[in-house]
Amino acid sequence: MKKFFLLCLFLIGLGWAISNFPGLATQGTYDSIVLDFREDLGAAEIAKEVNAIAQQYQIAPQLNSEFSGGDNVYVVKGDRTLLNALRKSNLAKDTEYIEPNYVYSAFEIPNDPMYTKQWNLRSINVESAWNETKGSGTTVAIIDTGITPVADLKETKFVPGYDFVNDRAEAYDDNGHGTHVAGTVAQSTNNNYGVAGIAYEAALMPLKVLSGSGGGTVSDIAEAIKFAADNGADVINMSLGGGGESQLMEEAIDYAHSKGVVVIAAAGNSGDSSASYPARYPHVIGVSALGPDDEKATYSNFGAGVDIAAPGGSEMGKILQSTIDPETGAEVFEGYQGTSMASPHVAAVAALVKASGITEPDEIRSVLLQSSRTVTEDPLNHFGSGHLDAAAAVQLAQRGQINFRDFFRWLRDNGYLNPRFWIDGGAVALLPKIAMVLGSYLLAFFLRNYFPFQWTWGFSGGLMAGSSGFFFLRNLFVFDLPQWPMRVMGSSIPELGGAINGSSMLNPFFASVLIPGILIALLLGHQQWKWIAIAISIGFASSLAVNAFVSPTVWGLGTGLVSQTFLIVNALLCFGLARLAIKTEVRSA
Image (cartoon, rainbow, N blue to C red; front, side):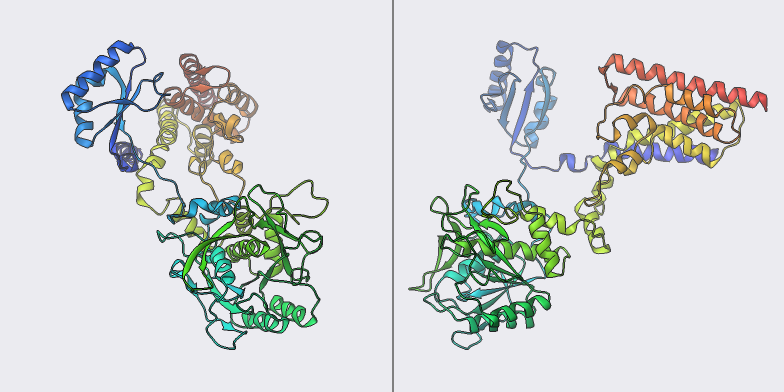
């Protein structure tokens, strides 16, 4: 008994310390202050207060916007010194609150100045995909006109490639097409310069098979495919094509596929009802082009050989990337359009999928196609499986894959490895639950002093079930698993009415004496189960009492005095029921 009360004192002290620790609540930055005047003050009184502030502190409070008049929300420039002064002044009694006007920022938005012009990246939901992966550890081979390492590729990783046109190791670009394509895949991103790429932590392998005029032979392309497969490429992008089926190229593609490489190619720009080669081969993902309106671009091939659609641009909006001026070799930022621009979008997302743990090319293909946004009316196969969706592809790739690396990354990303989590709002929210548990045990010990009974594990479990459940599981979000089982296990019986749909509102059927009464009536004659029912009734009393003072919200009764009265009355009834049942059992024994 003594140890238990010492534990209670320790937990109460810990709870007090936690509740008084500011944590992230005061760690923001601000250069202005919010003044929310009471709504019962008239306009004249508020104007008088505003003038008084202006004269005393030499500042000029202004309505936050034209919509702030109804709520009387004013903003004034100031720092912590002014904030403290205003809070201590007579103004405090006329305001609902005076608080910092914190500055919040968007997450995972690249700082590249021209990113806002890249409609194509946002149209494939790449920002959400970046929350999970940027393609690190993968290599994308660009079989094209070569790649020139312009300034906006300075931070991008490169692996050795080859120039099959001029038979040399350096595969520099003399056209601009290959550099532009490479930028869509892995342009240096978050470098405060230029534009962004999709899988910007992936490595690029430059393989030049097209000359400065844009033409190249099947034999060079086939050799480049095998080179990529033999030198560690995970994905091959071919923004090229033409007519004529080639056994040599098909064998090279089959060889790359057998080595675990995903091969992607552009469908072609002639507006025909079938894709060009090599997009037509079985082990190649053929890509048609979308304009900014998400419709098929007028130039894009469609029909046979098209597996998926991705942004390719149009005159309304082109695909902006860094490339070279073929005349001077200098870096320029140009908008191109074509299925050549659509294909690297898919190649880059394939790299994101590979980085998420999917290794086999057929599985990566399946993820890309299954995760695409389906177009219901597509009789001519303009879009294949649908529109490319990077976020959905990464989410599908990671579904059900839980290894130690992912688990610890999840712990880190959700803050569980950060000490601040345990002493900030996340832990403070658990205090009512801790109070419910402690309250149920204190009530049980109180009754035990008057009516001695045997304490069992079943009794303890009943207290937990009635008071809080496994509350630490309630807000535990584990990857893509359904969350309702966590909410159910993390809820007490009184909370089960809203647990599945995630509502915090109590159901009056569950949050009443009815369930404990039924359980005790049914189990009172059972030697062991009756004590579990009695413990559940005690737990109910604690849970309902804490909710009555912390969050008195009951479905059909609203929030306030009526709900609070309902919860208090039922808490007393539950406690009285448990007391009566224990008294009866002890006397009969």
